[in-house]
Image 1 (cartoon, rainbow, N blue to C red):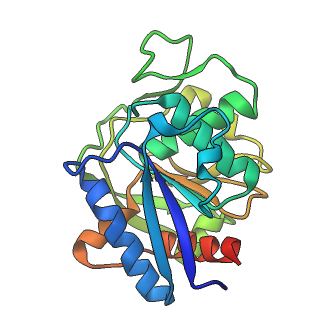
Image 2 (image 1 turned 45 degrees about the vertical axis):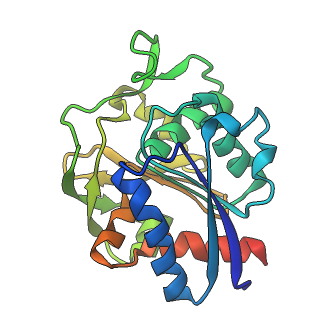
Image 3 (image 1 turned 135 degrees about the vertical axis):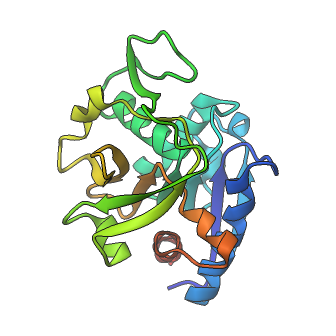
Amino acid sequence: MTRFVRIALVGDFDPVVTAHRAIPEALRLSAQRLGVEVTAEWVHTTTIGATANELAGHVAVWCVPASPYASTDGALAAIRYARETRRPFLGTCGGFQHAILEYARNVLGHVAAEHAETSPDAAMPVIAPLTCSLVEKRGGVRLSDGSRLRTIYGTAEADEEYHCNYGLNPAYERLLADPEGLRVAARDAAGEVRAVELAGHPFFIATLFQPERSSLQGRDHPLINAFLSAACGRAS
């Protein structure tokens, strides 16, 4: 396994955003845990073209919180690039929302799929306002039996932090019905989808919660450790 990795942080950096401050520290803690060196570079969504070749020099992609992004197309192109080139991918909060949107459009062919935050009158709002806001909330999640996420955590349940108002519209949960495609990896106590993973991909996981926030308490996180480990494997 290589000891040096370069990761793209896809999003529009804002020092006011808690997750944006937490992510570099989260990667530092995971790198320390694994004994590797990581270079994390912020990639503004407006700089990403349709083919996302701008990411070719990075071995892994993290689509970070704080949407709407300056360029939805740029964020979706980055996610598609990671999916199709089989680069390790992690999406948190807005990254979770857009990973589902990208899959609905480009794999399932639902070109009308939209995010209600940017298209409130959309005919197919795959991503919609949450019934209850999760801004600065903490809650339990149940990790799906047989999921990679459950293996990573080594437990059936976890407690995680959120900062979001949008999630998967329950009316479109059927898009995640194929066990060989993008599938549910975790739910909250009410049964709402809180994480997804892509079957057959080396590492493609997206969570509505923000595991990076654990770094603000000085703790590394098993999901970020696993993401960085997958990035090291890719670099090798």
